[in-house]
Figure: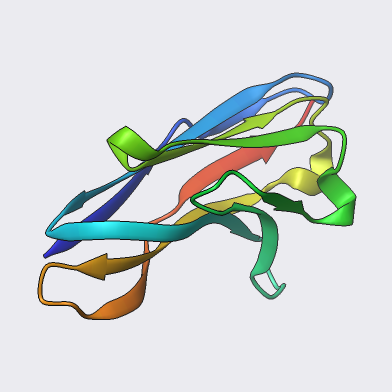
Length: 120
């Protein structure tokens, strides 16, 4: 079994920073891509940032220059540093991991989500 668990959400004021963390655990052989998505009320879930096992990154245009994704392969962990937060960044943030388990199955696992609220 595999678990993907996020942490670090909260309430901040516009312009402040927040760091989200996520770790995958369980019967894992390897993890390919890891990423962060978000879903605001009434909107579809959208990609925020992703990172490959080799460290290549991809960002949504709306967060480029403000958010930084990083990864610790040894810990099966990914983080999202969010700076200069705006009210429109308010959403539930989800972590995912594209991984191979010890039974050689390949699938995408999602965390339960963590709420980020940016408000004055």
